[in-house]
Image (cartoon, rainbow, N blue to C red; front, side):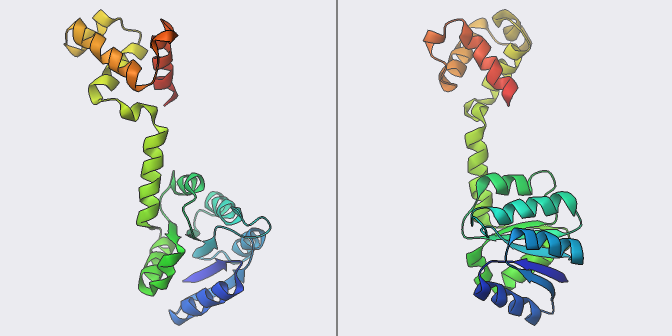
Length: 214
């Protein structure tokens, strides 16, 4: 397994190099910033990269942005991100689309050598290695970002019918319920989507717009 390491901390970088070499991995490059990482990938085309999130010059998200470039331009190269924390926006973008050949582990996991090496080999082989904390936070983010997640399945059916232009009577006929039930569901939709009575007749339109935006 041929590996490129991108980590700005010299001590940690050398520690990972030694750890991988002890596991019969070939470390073809060990660099300290995102630009050097991209050059190393271009030059060596490794099986997998181990990438730190925070690297020079700003020590914010250079590593993750470089990882996204690798995912886009070198699909055959696996990417295992190591981080002190979960950067939700970039983690979601990194994992989204094609979840194969990607990993996101918190640095605490490196202390568990067997788990780290197993995850690295899995990523190099086209699989995934995701820290449980990463999965948990992304699920929470997903729920927060979906404004319709607060609606019950029946309320979502009613909102879908509203988006199709159906009247209350038409919705009742389509869902085989009474118009009173439809009116109750619509009231609940307005309440849960925080569309106040002051929005007047526009509430129905605003609710449909929220549906169409998801």
